[in-house]
Image (cartoon, rainbow, N blue to C red):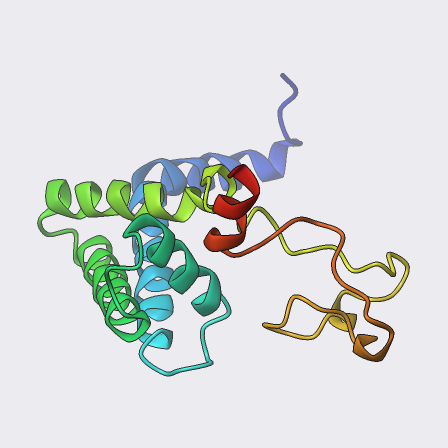
Length: 163
């Protein structure tokens, strides 16, 4: 491994020592800030970029037992608790257990059998992503009857297809 030129050697050594000493703490606090911030955003409808995916995921995982508002409030509280735990460094075992629980939920949409595999494909692949109307599963050409090419995104439709 090559070393830095002579005058930069002390800088490199000090930087490496600082990263070895504070790197894990910095990463923990930074991740805590991100979790806390996303948890706060979920308390304000429409501000969180992951709100609709989170509601659909929780709905699928709980078999529609929790109303959307309740599930979003619980997720926001969970994320804020994880964030505070990571920022403060207190109760780290509990915080990491909550983080693992949350990560299982966050990783579940692609492997869920409830049908929200990815964003449905628009029949116009060369048009921009924003061409699809949000929340409708349809592209902007409704008057032509265009529907997404990817299969159903509702559980009832999947059950009907599996018949």
